[in-house]
Length: 220
Image 1 (cartoon, rainbow, N blue to C red):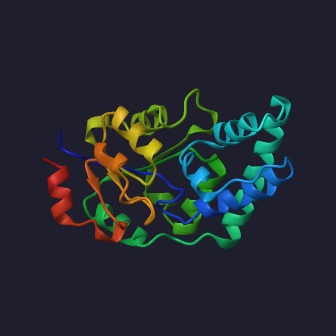
Image 2 (cartoon, rainbow, N blue to C red):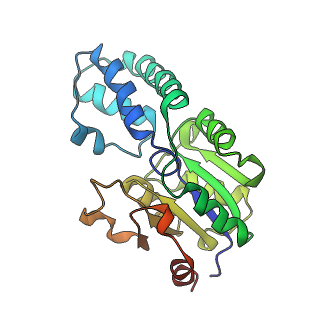
């Protein structure tokens, strides 16, 4: 089907925020006697904060009564750090200009809170270009379930098969493919060679590298 819309994840794709989420989690988890490695954090990249926090607290036998309190602390601290320290990923301006010139509908779909969606719209000055945005924060299901992508496409009144998605996480890729969308993955440098990206329609090392040849290949 001819492609008419593009949907972007946010964390790790548009902004370098994954380390800041981990930094916030480190500070809060330390209060519970939990210390995680970067490799451990990588296994839960792409999950929403609710599942991320519950997973690690449950694994360390922290009472479930603490889950929501810990999540709220992690989210509040992470959003504060992002506001102060986050930087744009390479190629962000390029990719938005590319699809603006093609008159594509544009959407944002993230596991992160709505507050981050609003922040990125202001940070990039793209509010007027975004036709729809969806956060899995309050949805029944989160990535790797396709619900957040399907919600975004429905708001744009666009068929899933007409959407190209850009993702940086494994869970996000699975969500996009489960939604029957075309998926481009832009993994972090340390994960780009992992074999589990095989389900993606295209793998790039940077948004900056996306060009007309890639678009034509995906738009067949």
